[in-house]
Image (tube, rainbow, N blue to C red; front, side):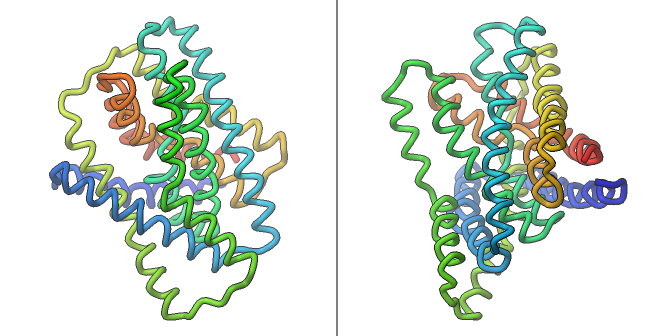
Length: 304
């Protein structure tokens, strides 16, 4: 990507960052945040995914989707490899290791990745970003929780139920409609498009609102510095090598790298709190990496 692209990307990120700040200033109640998350996850993003399938899907897109799917799984494996090396080299406390891995390996591919890809690459980018997020959702609720929980099989089995969710259902239904060329009335599509359009701004307001409830951040400077370096710089740099090595170009390459460079996923502290305990470190990681990604993502995108 050239410099003008990165400048444009920074502009789009700046707009979304402003929405995050607005959500932070407004500081919605936690109950309101739950409602916003429900609107985005259960309705907005599924509508966005479905409309992208209907408008952009073709045989070339199927190949791009397959590429993105494989690279998404590969990025998680790369993430674990890089993170383990950083933990060992940085002599990160063993007790912090599970939370460090969760916060460093998995990016915010849904709430930030999909809206940003829509803004930068259009509906094709949104669709490919949805594929990436689909793969990462599967990985986080399988390999991610297996690494986090170890031998707690019951908890892992319970977590697998989260794989059946509205975005994934929309992904499957959209694929069926696209492959079978089932006609959809234009009025229906207009409604679906309007519903999908609400997802990006609401997602940013949600992230800002969630960050407003972080409270006093708790982290070790060395550990947090290592995590920021791993999540926002090292993992994307390794993925640049693989993207060039396998000759991936165009929108697919852009989406893969952008999704790989997203900040720590919002669900990281929620999962850690749910299954392990105090998630102060990963909560702080979400806050810090989200604030820094407005600079790091455009710089990383210059490399392809």
